[in-house]
Image 1 (cartoon, rainbow, N blue to C red):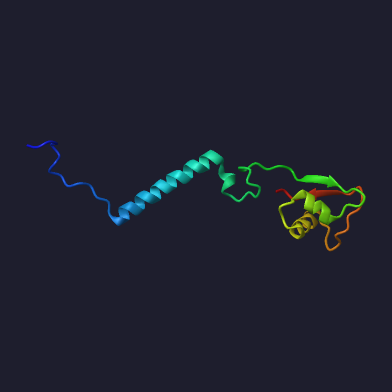
Image 2: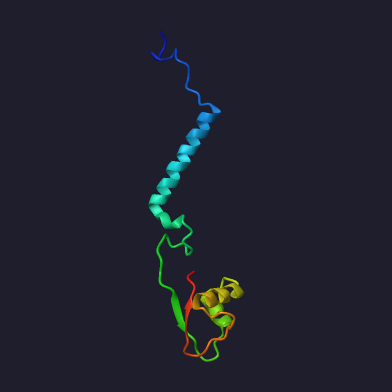
Length: 111
């Protein structure tokens, strides 16, 4: 007898399908763990990337000289102002008239 009592057994080998199943299982466990950590809203495309938390829309009061372009640029400096203006118009039901008046309260799109 030499060494281990199990030395006459063949080593365990994984087939290609076995490796694929093992990788898929590990990926599933990782994603479920991540989902439990950050919450389901992070994967649902909730929009603002704040882990499922939502905040009420921010509003601004139009001041004399303000334009939708200026409000949109200040609200989301990293975004294309044309898209932000369109989102503000849609959110506030401004239709085809992009004119805002001093004192008017405008809701801003989130994120």
